[in-house]
Length: 238
Figure 1 (cartoon, rainbow, N blue to C red):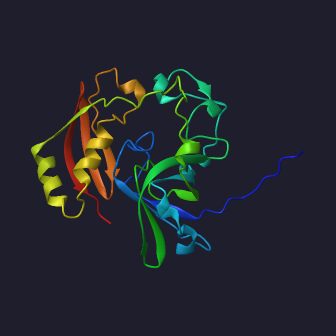
Figure 2 (cartoon, rainbow, N blue to C red; figure 1 turned 135 degrees about the vertical axis):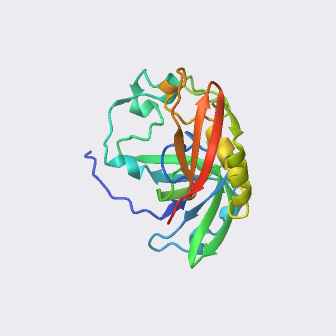
């Protein structure tokens, strides 16, 4: 039997505080901040979501659209192996994949309509803003939760690598932005404590000042030993 190619039409896109790949949690549910799935694809309506509230969690299938143009390789370097050893791409959750398709299970937090577009509100999403969504499916515990499953590569969640501390300037800026971004402090904490730097940086003295874009903010920070120092939070111009 021959294998025929086919096209996938996105049903919507992600609206999330993560504006670039750097700093996004490496797996779902490591960050509890809310995001939205905007169902703005063809023929999408509230009818498509009828009954979804009967499920506490959903699967979100999406495309790693920023990686597709770069292609893929049969072997990749998983971060869990320190970025040095290689495994087959199909034995990992690498975002550089043959068809660029990913899937995340997240908590369903609500449904609403914004400017005529159905929105699915979720918690724990690990995707960059604007990611195309190709499908949504309910998470069914009896079928999807395999209690005796094992993973020798990633059996346990990653340890919280860094203690996050704030400069006086950063604390003041968080306070000033709290009405506009009430979850900002939690988001910064959950993102930076996972140490988003490349693996090879973590065992060396690192004097570099990094920046992460969250919402329309640029968060500048650096790491000294096991402490992440948040230096400043600047609002970007439109």
